[in-house]
Length: 104
Image (tube, rainbow, N blue to C red; front, top):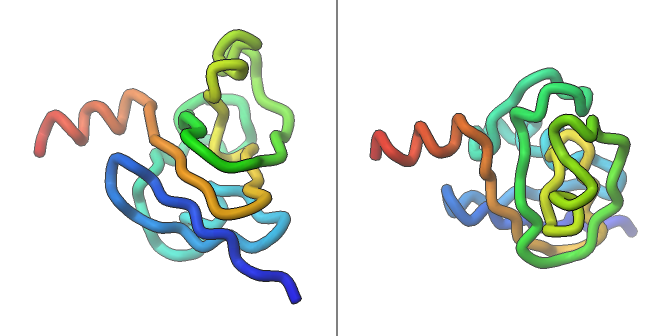
């Protein structure tokens, strides 16, 4: 039986339940949540950038313009290309997240 992976987003405190093989961004949209900014959904715009705080993930192809090899080594990735392999924790870190946090 495939179990859902629970992913905590640190900034908002939202918990996303992600199906095996489902991207983090797709799971968020399926659940009607808004804790990660959404852009192109294809790995090319960089809007959905997050930092992996803990847990294991598979990584899909991402534009190096938005996530360099050094950033990837520091745990940064695009949520549309991030596939949890178990329970984990991430932190949204795009420009839209900073703008929203400053308003609060």
